[in-house]
Image 1: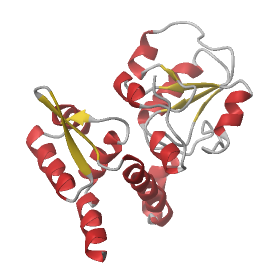
Image 2: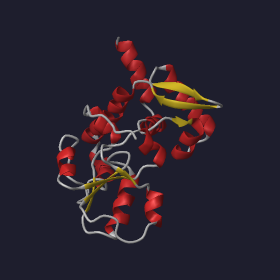
Image 3: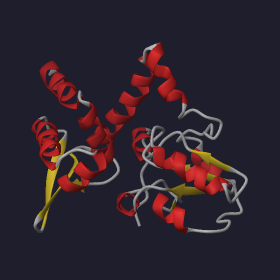
Length: 209
C-alpha cells in the first residue's frame, strides 16, 4: 500500500509534471497542446506523460487519429493538485514567500467554494477566462466564458454588476490579466482564489453545457 502511495508521489514530484496535471485538471488535452502550454518539446512532454500514465494517474483516450490524455480519477487527482498548492504555500521557506504575495493582492475576493453560490444569488457575475475547450469540459456553475484573448478585443463596459474572475486557480496569471482588463471598464472586479480543481476537491460538481 505504501509502495503505491510512494509511486504516485514520485511520479508527480517534478515541476513540469505538476504543470501537466494542473492543465489536465481543466480538460483532456493532446501531447501537442500540453507541450505548447508548458513551453516544453513534444518529446519531453511525452516522457512526462509516460511517467504519469505508468503510475495510473493519467489515462489515454483515442479520438480518431489523436490521443488525448486525461486524469485517470478526475476528482481525486484534481484534489491532489489543489492540496499540493495549499501545502506548498504553507511550508514554503521565507525566501520564497514574496513569489506568493503577488497572488494575494487586494483584488482577491474572500470567497470560498462553499460561499460562492450565495454570492452569485446576490447578483455577482462570474467570468471564466480559460480557453473555450476548458470551459466546455466543465466550469463553475453560472460562469460566463470570456477567454483572455477575447477580452482583449472587446471594448466598452461589459457588466453592470460586481464581477468575479477565475482561471486555473489562485496562481494563474490568466485571472490576473482578466481582472486588469475588466477593471478598465467597470468599478468592482475581483479574482476568485480558486478554480475548478479546488471546486471539485471541495466536493462540488462542475456545470457542463
